[in-house]
Length: 554
Image 1 (cartoon, rainbow, N blue to C red):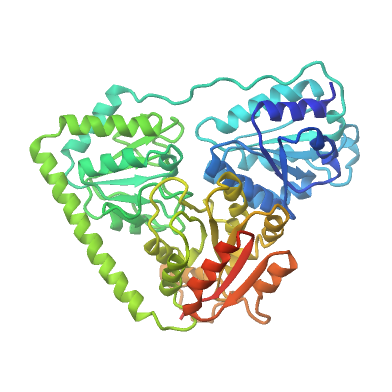
Image 2 (tube, rainbow, N blue to C red; image 1 turned 45 degrees about the horizontal axis):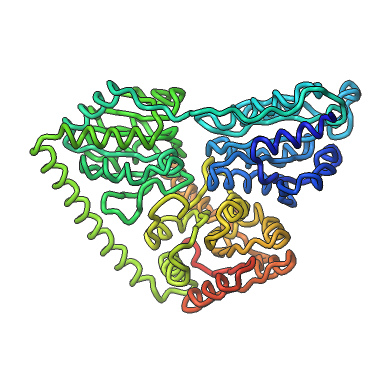
């Protein structure tokens, strides 16, 4: 059996439905094999970063482990930013790259390099197949490592000559592995005991809550203890129903502000995440003085990694939260339950006041032109159907987007981790492939969109009915905000104009860019036209781009 046949048969046995890639010469063995395997679709991207970004979001939306196909050293290099984001997002995927003929490795062949060393820092495992006999066992292990918690990308280099070698070692069926770990009852009791003595508990919900579809279990726990629920600043999912009165918002980007957000909390429960990825240094802990810190994770690797814990527990998120909520309800005194309900009521009242304040802000900015971010997001909500899936890279508009939409459960919302921009347009491809029966809308800033604008061509090429919404303020607004923070943080006296952060001269025309890649588009300059434009775009049921003029930084 040829090595390339073993490769393809191994992918079939692993249930791979999509290969996301940008083809090259050393990938010819794989590409030439595709017609014999119609159950696997090759999703063509015009840049490697788009292929990896689409695969990462597909993994998040589907729960499957897709395959990515890159082209030797430059292709892997092009993909590194997206691979970093996928690694930080814990997206399970097997990333391959064709490698030059191993008989040429001492001659410094064209495009050759140490691919394993390149990929190693941003993958869970990086390996090159040296003989055809290794293809099946390495691929079996690659999928296992990618899916083991915490999940993440694995890299496999495929030399072109090895793909054409003969071997008697064929593909093996996937392992039947039951990974869900029941929490230790003693650990559950220990956490419950701390929760039942807390008078001001708080919860931070990480992405593993959504990936485990544990929203209902977290709601039950939050209500039972009367706790606000926070998100990390960068997260892939909405890990708690954002319309619930116990939902707060996303935590800020440094320890001092996080500590301030927690206020006088005397216990913080961390659920399913790395906690915390700060942007700025700030002195001190993320937690209020004297607060107990408790963490539940699906693997021991994350427990007590960044923070000392009073109690840490390993367990699959859904059964762990369900068991913990039930234990709290069973053991709670009437006084505790009454106090918890009072905290829930206080959170509901706070939410009402915040909603009123936001409505006042929205009213004040309603008639500004170009459209204010609150107005643009309100119109977006008005123009989109209730079952819409939002792929969010709105950056500085993200807080207004969160106010405008209620994300109820897994699949309503996807964003990106890692902090690298350009994830939204590429990610929408993967989300739509994973969720073909729901309308998918990517919301991106104009600066971010230009990092992966080639995704429009892939959407047209594969006939993916995605609505791409581009918020055009003609600037890197987030960088301007960060300059302001830098000046305050380091007491910088300079008041120079923002340097190299404007996207004008010439202005970008996204409707024309879209047309050049086979996607119909329009530009909206009047806020009153936003909602009708979105209704038209969704109804078209084909790739569609809507560019919306919004205000810049004042």
